Image (cartoon, rainbow, N blue to C red; front, side, top):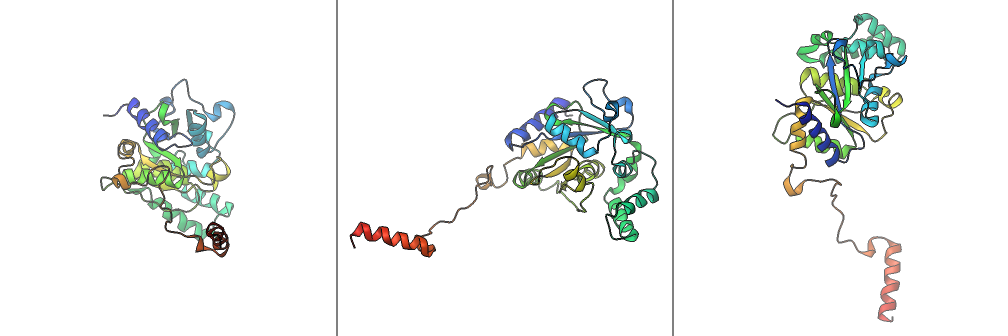
Length: 275
């Protein structure tokens, strides 16, 4: 049974070996606010503020903060509804999104809602057992994570994917719709389904939480962080693409490749031969 220190060490190893620009995020879902530690935790509502869930991730991974959030802390109320943290009817949630104008019409929005519900898997109803989450920078986390969310560039995330599937299992899956990417696919869905999810940060991630334009992410069930760390860079042995990536460079090229190169090469050759 892995303990908190084991998770911290795995998070530090991934951060250091992949040269990540921010720390992996530990996400722990809570059933009652009494689970929130009395100290070392920031709650937006305690500051008289509301944040989005993706802002909590940013404060954890870049600022090193430990953050607890429930529906009372989250201004992105549709995300609260999707997580099942408050009693919000599906019809009210649907109408809230129709008012946003994200999709062509109510029928298009209804189809999207049905699609996203299907991603929660057989454990969809267990969402309603929870009331919030605690997020923490994994290398110094204060919680044992249910999910680990890791941001990076395409090369770094590819290395994590290859490490996860090195044993011929843990295949990530994803569907994209441009909203709720980090909070749902980076956190909630891997928790409910125990399947890793690739994240292409969406509207909230980009506009609210300062995700860089080159960043993507992966959300994985907490226990898989050990397999990711243990199998890092093993794919292909010496053929592993490495970090920095060892790209193949063109060879056998001569100056005749372009007229200008060839012109100067002939000038130099003539000077050397005295012709």
